[in-house]
Length: 297
Image (cartoon, rainbow, N blue to C red; front, side, top):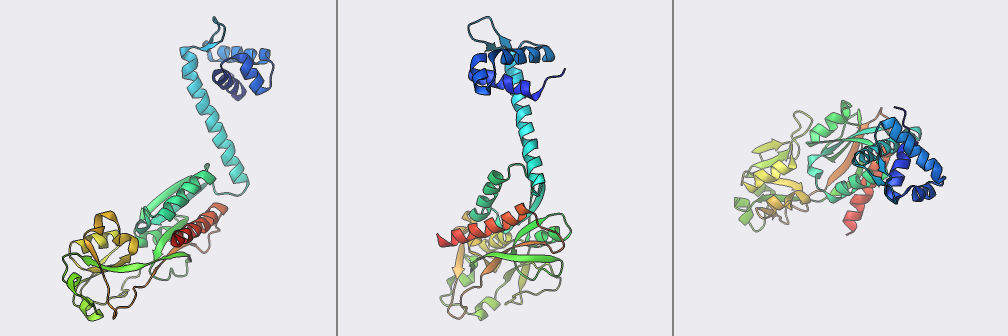
């Protein structure tokens, strides 16, 4: 069995064009060359692909089945060629991207992944979703090549963090929490109630604790959920407070004495000793552009 890719392309052209003569014109060949290629393919495969009893050749049942396989083989060859070209140009063949779960379903992230699929179809991408500390840890131990997270602290000597955006944060409590009914909050009011905090990678890091009562969580979404249940107040990114399952059950807190809540930075992290390929650099740049576009709207 010595069929060739060229014969498969002739088979596909004949099936799509409806006749050997039309396929020959499309391929820029003589009709006799097309007919010979199909005859040799039938001999190689051991079955008749076209019924030639009518005015125009028609695919047999075997021909219809093998046409599907032929298209799959050609598509695979195209993917092989595309990957080979990308590798020859220095592009990453594979990339492991770790994303902070707090950024899941954010339009700038989703839009960037969609653009990545269009621009680099040959890339083998692995996506890892986890808590903030997971992302930095995966990059540090080389499980992931690049991480995207909400920055809470310096990444240390091993990792390099590059800021690409910032998000507004808000103070929230559950609708039935005692703080929800106070007209002008102070830091003292917050100190009287349990605080929900995002956990730090550094052991013993107390973070921005205002209350002696506090719980630590590794997920902003979990913080939002516990806040809806009245288990404490929390400082979370605005998009978390507006998440549909939470939106109706959370109240934003404010008070002149509290000032404006701080922003939180979105950054990419990579190992300082790992060279970043063109796709990783493109990802970082495109993410930054998408977040900036979002702020302008």
